[in-house]
Image (cartoon, rainbow, N blue to C red; front, side, top):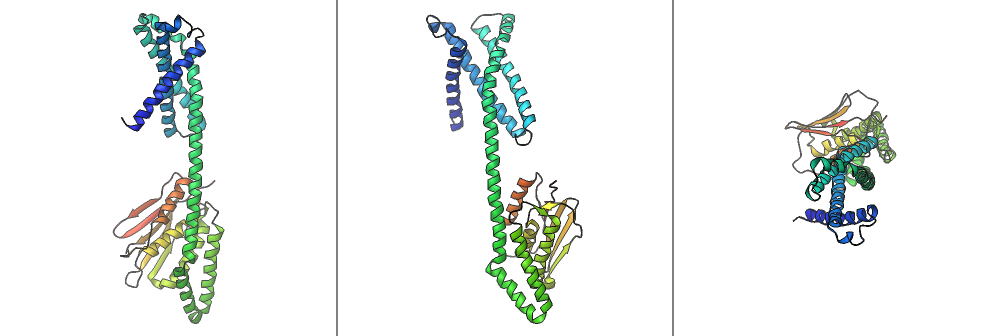
Amino acid sequence: MSDYARKQLIESILIYLFGGTVNLVVFCTGCFEEPFFLSRNFYISFSYSGLAWVAYWKGSEYLVDLWDERIPWIEAPAKRFFISLISITVYVFLIVWILDLFFDLVFFDKTFSEALESSNSEFSTSLMVTLVINIFMHGRGFLIEWRQVSIDMEKLKTEQIATQYNSLKNQVNPHFLFNSLNALSSLVYDNQEKAVEFIRKLSQVYRYVLDCMDDEVVSFGREMDFVKNFIFLQKIRFGENLKVEISDKEPNLFVPPLAIQILVENAIKHNVISEKDPLTITIDVIDDICSIRNNLKEKKVKDSTGVGLANIKSRYQYLSDREVEIVKTEDYFEVRIPLLNMK
């Protein structure tokens, strides 16, 4: 027997004993007095009550769990409550009817018509007991889901902070600083105006990362301004070997901060960029989807942990029910992220 089956069996036995005792104590004041205490009817009543409690409890537990999966409390609490209440009421009616028929026909030798008539009198009592059980079940289900949502929110906040921290860390790591300063040192001698522009763009990149660290979403236009500054710095390093085509569409929608920049950075990090194999990145907007696509010439040695893309997916799972789409062929790699309407 599995651990789950053993646990269910033990719970059912305890509910059977508890339910049988409670029902007899509450609804039968003389049940524990002799001679009824030693009579056959006493044990039949105890068995009936115990089985009824097991059926009410376990059946209600199953229905509550079933509706928890299909209609979560957080999404539609009123609908969830009324559907669950109706389904459980119907279930209780059927259980009472079946148990009463079974005990009346088997143990009390009643006819079928007599059993039907007597079963109706037990329904109100059984329903009251079941409603008490279901107040507990519904409260338990709501508290469990509320707790899980709180845990998920805290987990997402931690992941978001980690993502933003990693993005900031990637910008200030020695390798990035070395490349940026090396490019800047060449510009100082060759093109002072461009060097000033380089410094200005670099400062804007840092400012944006710091400013958006506490934001769940930013406007698409604001993110694209940041991406353009980031691309400017990269083009100083790679020159015409890096080509970026950006759509002029700017919808009034939102994205998680750094989402597009991380995807552009991934394309640069994972692919060969040379005069022989230039990298072309296309950022396009189609309706409410932003597509970041690049031709594929992957490096043989990859410097990647996959954290960036995984984090983008996690943030979208929190912010929207729409998913991030990934398309990879022999020729190109494309990521499509939904643009969000936060109104």
